[in-house]
Image 1: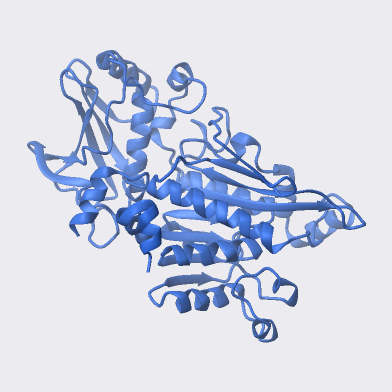
Image 2 (image 1 turned 90 degrees about the vertical axis):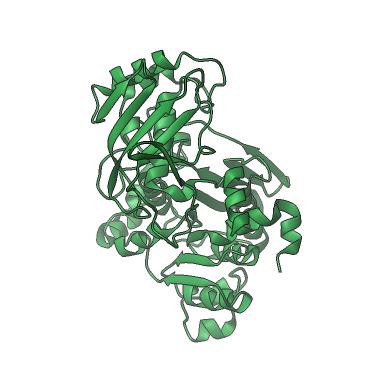
Length: 438
């Protein structure tokens, strides 16, 4: 069924796609097309969220809809669930007929590996952006826009796909959310109606121009960058802009803003439901001194790891981190790291040891820390190899030469422990071998 796709990104790429759980918020003209594309790519597990029913005005652009759906006032999520099962009987779709501002609806996304936002308002973007950062969920924000004058002439039209990878920047880093509008949209309904009547929320409740071909183009761009993120078949662009009138597409990346109130060192990264921030990103002073312009890259130079560890430990004294360390011995231990529900423990210690003459870390966890079965996590995320009495190692393919970027390394490592499903999404060779063995 997927032989033509396998020619593009291989059997392992197809297996990676099929094991993921994908969340889509907003099943309108854009979200419905994206959903169909992902189903046909072989995605089996979905959570789809939308509180709307299908109306006659939706039929020109809502994939999978029919006039009968309008007459019987069916919900968008129920129609698309049935559509997916007609394409692939193995499809497992959790259809949530709720608004994303409903806490129960948002909680449904916690089981997802990747989230897509296909909504047409700023408040939903703000909610999903924060949720992605707090719960370490890669988030693909997709949107379209058409500006026409009173005579129907199109002045501007296009769309964009923006990829939020926790730890590498978010929508607020690029001013990608109009926060004033987002706050106005989240007003209680009586206050919101008053604000609309007084002109404080311009364009609210006024249908925006839309065309199926533009929705399909942006949906295809989002699906393509998602495939790149999962399989590594091409470089990932974290911002793709499409100009509808000029038929021009521009792809580029953006950098994390270190004063961002959402994903900076004092922001929401990995807070989850507990409200406890990711420990490695609390250490502001050291981060600001060591951060270079542009995206973080692990150096391959022969760094003095002893000095790097000494700096890390000294900075850690002023943070909530519980650290034991011996820089001269080239090791450190972080206590009580929060772990995913994929593990048999809520928290665990983790030890990092650098072999003499190398900047490659050996990462160790207690022998009694195990992965629960049948959760889609690479079975060799934790190896069975006892490195030190009472300690076993994590997969050696996870991290290589980290140079002096100890903080970035620890942030990534803690992120993997909180969400091990992120491991291998960029096409880890070790993971490919494991999957081939199944």
